[in-house]
Amino acid sequence: MMAGRARLTDIFTIPPKDEGGPCTVLSLDRLTAVPKVGDVLTFGPFQAVVAATDRQRTRSCLTGCKLDGLGSIAVLVDTPADEIRKANAGDRLTVTWGADTPRWFEAIENPPAFHRLNTDWNAHPNAPDVQIHADDAALYVRFRPNAYMYRAYSGTAWVTLRFADCSRYRQTPINDHGWYGGKCRFSGAGLDWGEFYEITGETADARDPTPWVHVAGQGTRHFHFYFRDDALEVKARDWSITREEADV
Image (cartoon, rainbow, N blue to C red; front, side, top):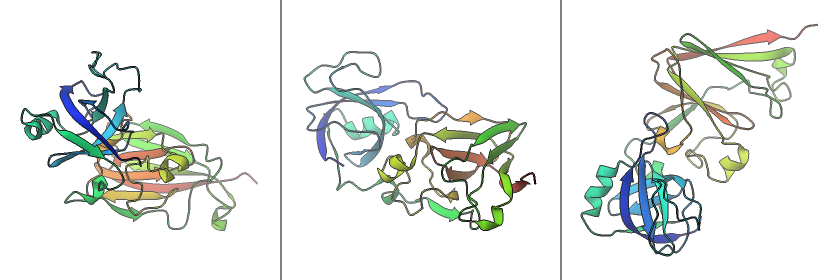
């Protein structure tokens, strides 16, 4: 991660793309580097994770307004604007980010904890062919199993996870390259790529801008599954697994 420094010149609020999503825009100038998605900005007593950033040299703010000053840029963050305004207190703050900045889960009172759920099975590593559909308050996730590593599934054509009382789900574009490159908000937090987890504690949903798909349930447990090309996040009350045997 490249260390950087900038000056906070303005704070905007825009409508979030999804309920609970990031909606605060920071105008920065006098940049020594350009912050990237996932960078943790530190200013005063606060930290904020970059959820989106304007393309360099366009100087077109996320609000649609023009930015003044050479090297100006706008970034979308997950920290409420009112909190940042309290820290700003009418003065232009210095914002920093870089390798020495603690990651978000290292700087909170209730960090995420991970419980792996797939101890004796997994999705196919190359072609899981994931299929997702909701039926009332249940979410069904169907995919091909990994019979190479788990020989008990050699005769199984499909595996289906059923999430009961599901309230919402989303597929984020986090693949293995993004995971190992630190693009996932849980990268380096103590879990392994390619596995199925329940996450308790702070899950920091707003740190990923991917919109949620809402389902009819009310469940709030957070399930997280890393497939080959994306990551599945589900809010539900419980889960179960069934197998479909291959035709002989």
